[in-house]
Length: 336
Image (cartoon, rainbow, N blue to C red; front, side, top):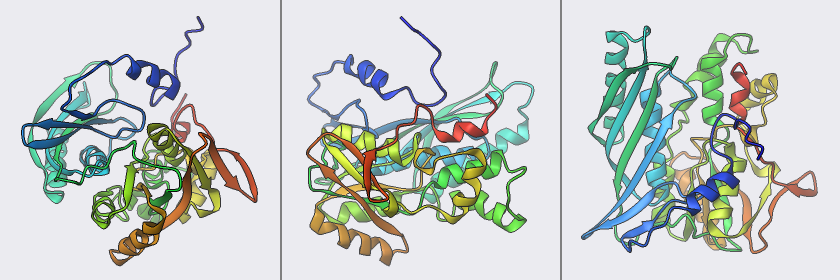
């Protein structure tokens, strides 16, 4: 057995699929359990339906509290839920953690939760041996209104695939914060890139809510690690379908076109939090795009779901395989 070390980031999909397949469960109250492309769990408890999510922040330490709240809330929203309650664990590095750092983290955490109407109900904080930067792990609980559950496996052949905003918002922000030296950006451009997590932002709560309430939505997914390409693959796998993606229709941030080539980063494989993938009935696609636009959110139709289980990228008039990434492209900025 060739048991080589795995690359940084998510486990390879083939391995994760095998591991998740060994998790048996027959509880009828579990409406959505573990699976590829499943953003959160959904469980029924009495008359309530809850959405449960946990996710860490490991690629950056700046604005980590904002990231951990937003990333977890995004996944709740992808299931059609409303984020409500949160617990957070902070693991802080020894010999580097000060009282002012801890106070700053808690202040940012309170502000982030307040801005999204989320109640912080607990967590854990400790100074930990063996880490060099703060790590935050969030656990969030959301509620699901009657008839609003959007199954991650719901996409069907013929559905349109929509994308909100431009990519890759999160990757650009992290590069500007963690690897700003030597970037071909003036001070104003660098600050714009750093603040891109706030404007247009990495939250997809607004566009997810608009799409959910518009109707005709069959599945939603929050593309994070592995970028939009990995997110689209996960969505197709969850639904047991194929997907055809139009490369020229995927909008790229202008600042990304300047930053990413320096590190040989493919925008299709870089952290894409801030954009939302929506599958919907073809006749509903334009209506959702227009509803987003009326709220100041850019949207694009970037592909369609197919019956044949192929992951196709249409580019320059030709058809090829949707690219796969063993690790998120953002890892290229970190020392090997």
